[in-house]
Amino acid sequence: MSNAPAPNVAAIQTAFREAAATLDAFLKDPACVAGVERFAEAAAATLKRGGLLMSCGNGGSMCDAMHFAEEWTGRFRKDRSALPAVAFSDPSQLTCMANDFGFDEVFARSVEAYGKSGDLLLAISTSGNSPNTIRALEVAKQKGVTTVGLLGRGGGKMKAMVDIPIVVPLATTSDRIQEIHIKVIHITIETVERLLFPANYA
Image (cartoon, rainbow, N blue to C red; front, side, top):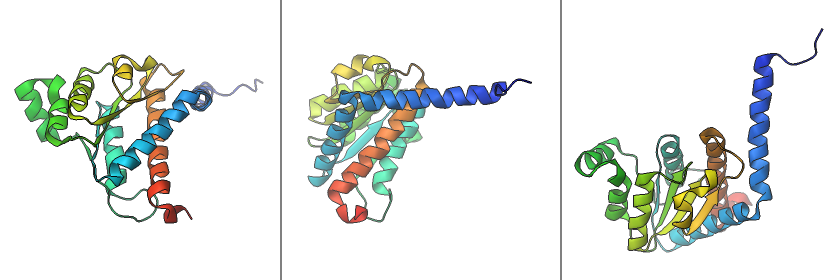
């Protein structure tokens, strides 16, 4: 009688090992960890000067952008004051801008509307080549907005465009990349809270 795991169990174990290997590769890459530190420092500096945190992405990356924003305006671990953050995810605004200007402009128009010097934009793309996030970065640069890219697959075009690139190594599929992206988001928020609200971690 074989002691090998059932096919479904083996596939599940393989998936978890792939996820763990991706996280391990991220942790072993000094540039990745340094990128998260820079992201946290930039976000904290933005909030200290009364700036706005903005975020955008497509599909699952939009979900991560929304998650990023709600953690600031709501509560992460313990109560503290609400912090200014917005994700570009309102369907009425997005469809209006897409209808009027084309889908590539939906995030750029929002940066134009809300962004100002001293703010921060988190642009999320597993490929690093999403046309609408690229356009958002172009407008952000024009407005003096600090930019962070949560990226994958080598970083694509966006890697050279952002002030702080964070590129997930090893992974080639969007799901594995997004699993690291949400960890980066959570750990960045925790790091900022430790800087701004140290009593919450005493």
